[in-house]
Every structure is written in structure tokens, then in C-alpha cells.
Length: 129
Image: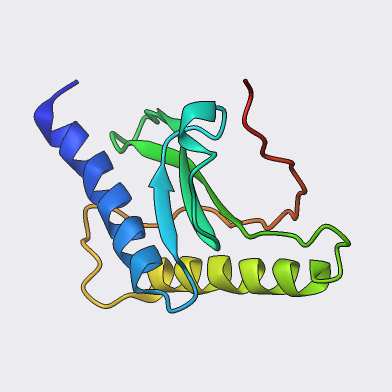
């Protein structure tokens, strides 16, 4: 892969990281795969996690990169804060996605294609010993 292609992907990651870190509610940004157990036990919530999903090379000569943008927060043991966690994490993702779509100075060399979806999930992150 050429250096130019790598830098475009890196620019996208850096832009999303900057937007996440600028959000007043976000405590941490991570990039990688959620399956990397070594990376998960040590995080501060709410955390925004950008997961690479691959790239496609359509006939128009443009590369389409795919990512999953995940936001998670701590759920209390009795789940009494569930509706707040869902609302807050969806709000954070909406804010980042909206800024990606409408941020001034977006390079003409890339754009957001398609639509975003929001799917709440519950996962227990535990350290394996």
C-alpha cells in the first residue's frame, strides 16, 4: 500500500480522534479492535472506540474506508443508570458524526458516505486470568 493511501486512513483516524477528545463528555479515545483483551481492562468512561472494518476499492478510483464508532460507559450493578448511559453514549456518537458531516474545512479528498446507525449493546468486560 502506498504512503499516500496510508496517510489518508491515518488522517481519518486522527480527525475522529480529535473530535472525540474535544467532546466535553468523552474521557478517552481508543483505536483498534474490541477483541484485544489486553487493551480493555484499563479504561476511563465514557470511552469512544474506533474500530477499523476494512476498505473497498470501487470502480470510481476512490477508496471507501469503513469503521465502527463505539461509545461505552459504566453501567451500575443494578442497571439503574441504563437509560442515562444509552442516552449519553448516543448523544456523544451523534455529536461526533454530525461534526464529521458538517465540519468546516473538510478536505475535498474525503467525505462521509452512507448513513450511520446506532445500536445499543451491553457487554461485560472482564479481565481473564
